[in-house]
Image (cartoon, rainbow, N blue to C red; front, side, top):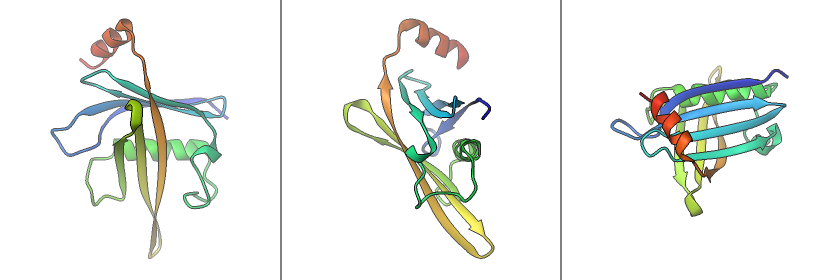
Length: 140
C-alpha cells in the first residue's frame, strides 16, 4: 500500500472558533493522526493504528480500504461546519490533556441511511520552541 499524507485546517464549532491544523498519514500500513491548535500551538497525536483499531462491525464500510477511510476522514474534517450535515466532527476533552476526535459520517444507499462513527483518543505532545516557531511561520 502506498504511503499517504494529507494535511488541512478544520474547526469544531461555528465561527468564531479555534481552528486546528491536522495531518493524517498512512505510513507502512499504519494510520497516524496529528492535531494542532493554531492559536496555542498545543498538539495531540495518535499513531501506529491499523484498520481494526478504529473499524468494527458497527462502523465498517463494505469493501473500503484504509486509503478510502483516510479520504472519508479528510472529507469530514474539510467539510463546512453544520450540525445537520451528513458529516460531522467533534472534539471531547479527556483526562490529562488528551482529546477524543469523533468523526460521524452518514452513508446513504437508495432510501436508506446510517451513521458511522469513528473515535480516536489523541494524546498530548510536548512541543519544543523550534516546533512552535515553525508552526507560527506555517500559519501566517
